Figure 1 (cartoon, rainbow, N blue to C red):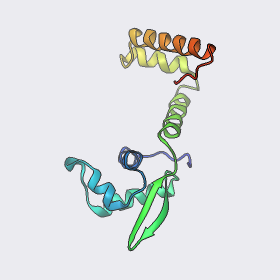
Figure 2 (cartoon, rainbow, N blue to C red):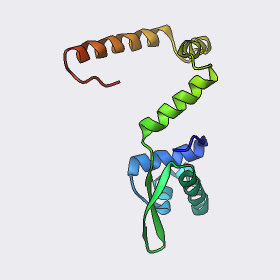
Figure 3 (cartoon, helix red, strand yellow):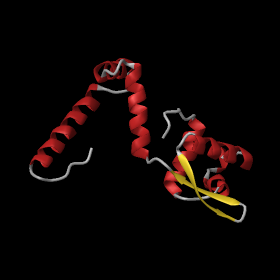
Length: 133
């Protein structure tokens, strides 16, 4: 994907594609909860923007309907967001975590739980099992 940032609304549309898979503008529109529904042309514009940004790709045309699919997966997208976030902290995970602690976004209990999970993950990999982050 191009390193262009996605708006919250674009991300919401991309999330629907991850959930549904290959589909049309109409299918995405109908998959949105009632309170998030907007005009068909608005969803169409968002999908075309996502295509320009490299997050979606056209795969087929059936009649007048274009079908799109995600060009990136959630893991790739999240990794990019984490890299962008780290860039804001000079690439320092410590500064990022320190900021999260200061704002109360993450607690020491959360950090200890992450540390324990990491230790368990490393020990299971050491026994030849595949670990999942």
